[in-house]
Length: 95
Image: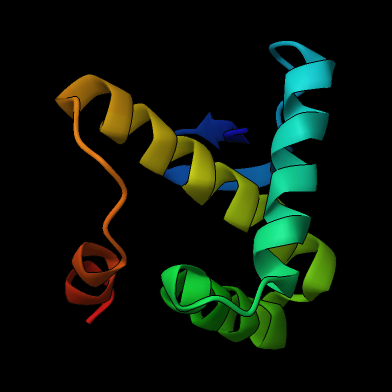
């Protein structure tokens, strides 16, 4: 879920997400992002706000993939640090 990077000399261009990895997992993370974007619970509020801000700037489809990547990074950090999800921690980092 990382962007492709093309660079030559001093010029760097970022493209669409790479097709590396399992497509089934990418699809599942995008589906999870759809659920988070529609959810109205307090726990997902910081993620929804971030999604809406990105969607306003870059479009809804791009924002959905960005949210999927952000959720994947959050899940990775939770597993690595052996912690639980805390929405208040997200609010501090977003500020």
